[in-house]
Length: 499
Image (cartoon, rainbow, N blue to C red; front, side):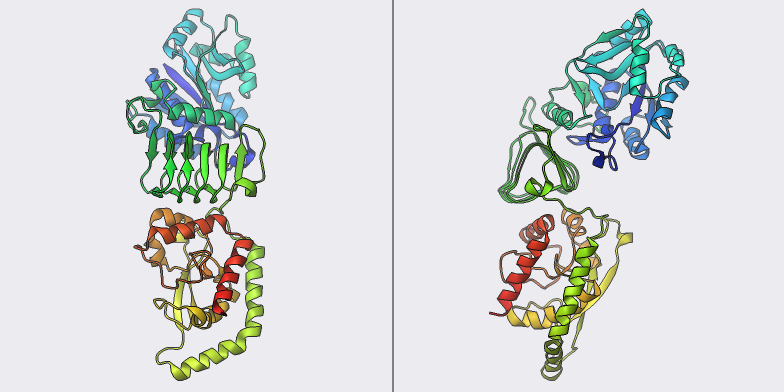
């Protein structure tokens, strides 16, 4: 049997449309589209025509991985929704039966039986739910030649229902990811394997079951590169994506899916929720019956969208620049500080020239942040202090030898007053990938006390072997950074130096 798969559709919230079409929304560990294709292959489909509109390259890459080479597959890209459906008439043929399927829904019907009914009646068989058509239909191939006036899904359904002798079947269960509620339902059914086994068809080796004991509903899968603190509690079914980070005392699950590069703060609670890749949830917060993205959260149960800062702490993506207003205010504040403190800076330099042997200043390399994961985009600068990078300082010595000369770098825009520890290109490459992904979203700080709430300050460069606890503290700072947080860290630092 041949299948014509229509791959397009806007997510429920338009802010996600820049990165997703509905068939590419993740369900557990892969895009929903891949479950659809696996199900079709298991149902006996041996030839595909994929109609692509929106994120076509991304969708085609997934399809080429999913469809075995032994099967026939063609890809047709459209410039608009109207031209997408206009392709249907051109794809008519002498097939006894053709399946036309929208890739953001997946009914559990036995397609072999439906195909036989369609051929016998020489009429379309529509797959529907109580709410309406599920976007799937089996019909004789030659009948598509008459679909010349179809411009979208609605006109296609009207045309099908106008055909003589058409019939309707109502499969149950079915998956539908056009809404956030449907997306969470699909996630739960797939994670618990409540949907027919053909979604995990062994003929498609890329579709592996969530590893657990057979029949166990409390499945937990943690992908390589993910970090789970020993005190965190996971209640299956739970999926943790690559390079994700779960903090101390967090509770994840049941029915929780964390995409790649997700950060969960200490003592956070997540259940019946989906965290899209690169999302962050701050420490002590609770997320339930919700879908979360970078800086946004959608409550499914109440159908409301609360303000993000109340229950969800966003992080900036690596592609976004820091807010220019904050950047300029840091530089302006540093210039004002230098105007008042230049006599102290000059006296410190003269004292070092008289009483200390060796060079007066030391140059430190710093990677300009934020930046992307692509090393070709990285740009390295340098700044000067009165202390070597490998030397630990404390008390007033840190203020005089590091903070005061570092104000010049803040005024130049190379550093901020408070941020993550400045690292060179080499030191950044030595970081574990999970932490590096988060680090590249931050801002290098003159004060980088990653032990938030203490007065001791680390100034030595980060090494690949540094313990996970400091990295976790710095990761949580990246997730919760705000002007208020920075002012608090700066105040504790200055108060500790003037004691």
